[in-house]
Image 1: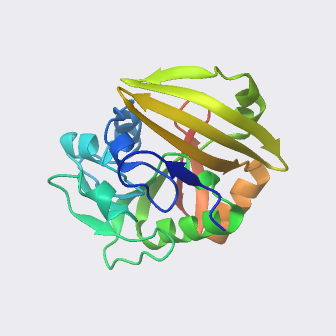
Image 2: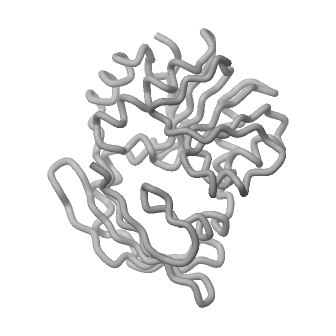
Image 3: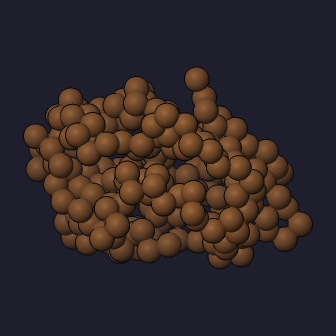
Length: 224
């Protein structure tokens, strides 16, 4: 069942994301984190690349990037890179990559979807490759109720309209404002305990690598 929904001007994807909004979101230094974790000039498959906010800066750093997203509208904003329009769960390309990237906290999907994502990561990873993940670690779930109710991302004002704790998850509804445009996005983020993460990685044929950031929001995994 889809736990996400969105509203506002322009195309809204099946998981509630507004294409026009995502086209406005600036890069937040994610590409530098990935660049430091993968080989120079690596071939990188980014799953859920959206409008190319991370893929295109990675290409600018000398990597050969292939973007994947389930929304053709999102991919229309990606220029100069090969892209594939596909759901992550069902993607099976013939090529294997030096690195596979799953960012934007997509790993915090409900458990069945998360395990399918991990299987796709492993399928496309070369034998000596590295998978790079961005997720919401357990500490985020403890801290989130105290997060600011209004913040800014570039020119976008973000307002938390609702946030409630569920068993093993947090459900939120956010409002985004840019000029005279307003969007909403309701989503659920599922907590992943450390033991569960280790087990899910192992089930996909992956082994935890290392943390990339002090807040443990970014980490690597390698073929087991």
